[in-house]
Image 1 (cartoon, rainbow, N blue to C red):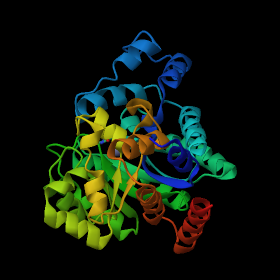
Image 2 (cartoon, rainbow, N blue to C red):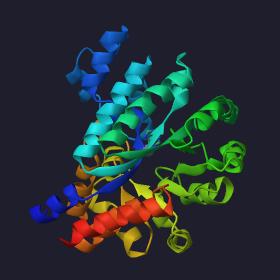
Image 3 (cartoon, protein in one colour):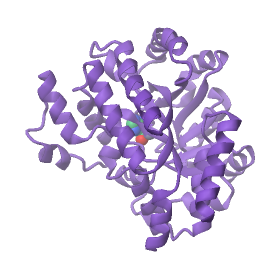
Length: 340
Ligand code: HPA
Ligand code: ZN
């Protein structure tokens, strides 16, 4: 792509709204933590682990992603993982990040949820000092029963009280097919009553009906991925009218075979029809790049213009869960930068 535009995007202030902190765990850190914690891995070397990152669909990725997370035991481990992401994000000129974590992946191994959040929070507080503002979103694993999500939600209530500035929402991730949003209506209703922000992965591998369920039953504020919405014209029009954003993750979609080639990605169609899409990295340690690499890949493949790149960046700020005042300041900063 045009190197001037690439450079302009790379240095632009931006928000990242779809990043699973466990998906930022690089193979080097997985091995370091395995050694530190005496955890046995199914792979002999960093290269052998990386070689396993040849995914055919979402589930083939999730199996390896959960295995990688098994090395996380202590507060310091969650801190180290999160600080590594903070440093990568700052290097990509991310000024605001809204970060997912999967407590059930850790509590089922006996790691208390308080330990998980304390380590992540300590690193995010350090991130704030270095120029990255952030929010944290607790995700429920949709392959597990709703009762487990409800128990996780109840166990997190003291943490929502303790970290109100940080822990501001709930989300839904893991295996999509066969686990529609409707399965989690009750737990989302509780989170909504509490005034938390709501998001859900929908329309990544699942059909448009899952996006409708996320909107109508869970009443989400944003949809994660949502790329299959393009198959339903009425849904696209509704997303455009409501300005409910889709957090699109191009390299993830490519690696998980949602599209067989980046030139087939539907982001530009969504953008052309007025849907609030932006670019994110999802699980950058597994999918071959952090947020800037995702911008480069999609802008290059779809031959997006400078104006379209600006719209994506601006949408990331518009869709952030920040105050109107903070949003206006972030947009002003982008505009000043973009015009020079
Ligand atoms: N989809 C569903 N669950 C996930 C993902 C994803 O892209 N990444 C981590 N958990
Ligand atoms: Zn995701």
